[in-house]
Length: 387
Image 1 (tube, rainbow, N blue to C red):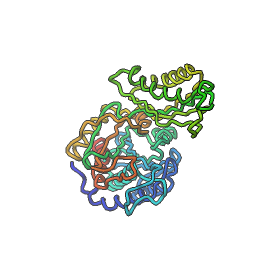
Image 2: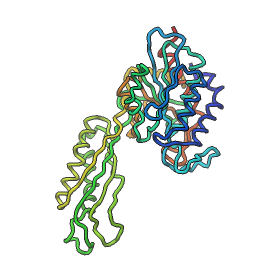
Image 3: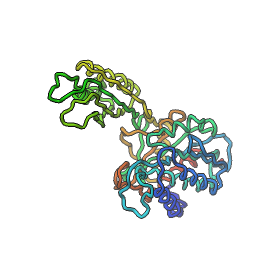
Image 4: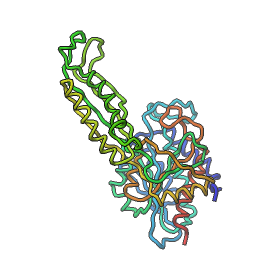
């Protein structure tokens, strides 16, 4: 079954929804307008139940099939939030909110799932129920975890859950997926080196925090180079180096480093969690100072279930003719929390030759809409064929 004709017919309407959402980006849990729009559309489509306020501003719509002989429910999830980025696309539907932009395509994800919800509400050609999940705060807020913590899976009896993300650089409407670990765990650290400040011309009277921090930036790379198995995936990046002084002739009392750790296994995650403070505290002590380390765990590794991944790939092949093996992604994705609670799969859909996500010139490619909508609809109709 190729792309469904109904989605070709709905493309102008879905595109209009997408561009409206694009013009009104909302960050983290502040998706009040977007959530209200989603809830209004789901009610308009005739969803059997529309529930708001899950995970603060999340929305879930329930669509019942023509029959329900097995009591099964499949969850389909899209994220709704934007990023704190100044848009530079010059589009006539560019962001009208200064400093906020849909730079990751969540406007497209939301619009595609709305399109799938409209079709499924019209046809109901499946045996069971569908929970269409619209999630806030994917971009660092952990909205997926909050929806799960609110009891979403149990409340709606969700058995499996599927998600999707657009991917620049892949042909429009093509798909890629991989079983097992797919997106990395994303942790952050903040290290404050404390010593004794003073005049730069008299370093012997100071305990130099810049020297400590400079050594730490290099030494932290030994976690990947000398502590972790060379064939495993781990990235340690120091992304900020700040001193309390901006002067040329002052050795500062404190220096703060910030950064991120990306891992693909619990073992490497634990390793980094242990070694970051050990290395920094040891270096600080060597130079007569001290280090205060705050290591915060973020999203876990996103792990696709074997069976559901194979099924998702088969559906993708039916829609687009092919589904490639996706590479490991060292970025994070809080769909991981939903996959920790239920089996499921996350797939990439091609966005074409566009700017990368999280770039001020990025824009979701509306030509990908029919493929994305068709994949979600086919997941339901093939997984729960009508009785």
